[in-house]
Image (tube, rainbow, N blue to C red; front, side):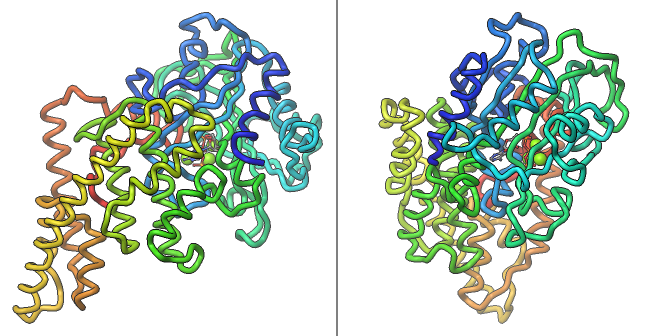
Length: 476
Ligand code: ATP
Ligand code: MG
Ligand code: MG
Ligand code: MG
């Protein structure tokens, strides 16, 4: 089942059950807490917060999302992309917990021939908030899930809020056991790769008061109108239904991975480090395209900085895979060919989107070229002096002054039989970061308020943490 069909089935299922089908909002909604939309519920916030009357009691959507906090996970786990799409169904004061669970269960277990996803019941696990006896009871008694596959978890994992006073509530997450080939048994708390999370059902039930986001923040009482917010990762469901190992191998992403593999002359699956690099490239090419499509251009701050970092990481990974020439003109059209099926604007706006990305690659390749020359001089000097280790200060200067990524320094040093004082490099990086933070605090910059991210991040986990400002543009 291709990704476009997974998307269609989700919307059809909920559409047929009284949900208004709402198109994805832009990634760039105006929200003081977010650089990018990072969940399906974001466009519906005014309804969920009771600030606006929803024009429909139920909605369903497939929302474009970007989570910059997941950038370091990409390629290494089976399940994190920087850009991804979230299927969701929403109830604004309409149905609640029992119906949300029933609908979810019906969709995933209904046979493929009857419009469902046909997942095997015996491999589904769920988590519930440890105090949510109601949800646990519904799973066990209404649905018939055995108690061993209903895992109770604490606030960090299963109590949702927006990080600020307002609606909050327990959530229940759905996992599938992919079998012993993927890791040890024991449930999602033991192995998140074997037990793959694919759906989060949020029951907005309580009103949260002022107070820190830690165990026991004040719950003021029940909300007058209870809401449902769910999020299912489209890429994850597609990968599951396609029987592939990870999200980068589904039909929307794999073609880019394959093309990058060809360009590098490698074989995907032959060695882990290269596989990770290829997945990063496949993910980042698509993310960059979707972010530019929504109107961002590379720059040194805010969204533009995130975009720049994503493009440069992709280029750098290709360089580490042995390709020195520009690759975006080859890879980007492959991604576009898949994604335009769901996002026709990629075709209409292609001239602009592609030229932004190609130009950023050229700029960065220029940077790399200069850096490589400086590196050669430094390496010669080191050897002449009889040392076998390139000084941390040199690696830092390459990085800081010439934008030359540390990964490349390490690789090129190894090629010349040199090691690098990485510890010294990291120390200088840390010092610089501290300085930058102090500067930023002093300037109280007019850009996005990071403390707001922290608050939200406390609630949603690392997924919304914005690391763009403290990390460096060209770090691999
Ligand atoms: P994980 O624990 O795997 O990081 P999460 O708990 O952070 O996921 P939620 O915030 O619950 O994710 O988002 C709802 C759903 O969106 C997840 O169940 C998953 O299917 C999907 N999802 C979340 N983050 C990503 C990502 N970076 N890439 C692809 N899909 C994602
Ligand atoms: Mg999770
Ligand atoms: Mg989750
Ligand atoms: Mg996460």
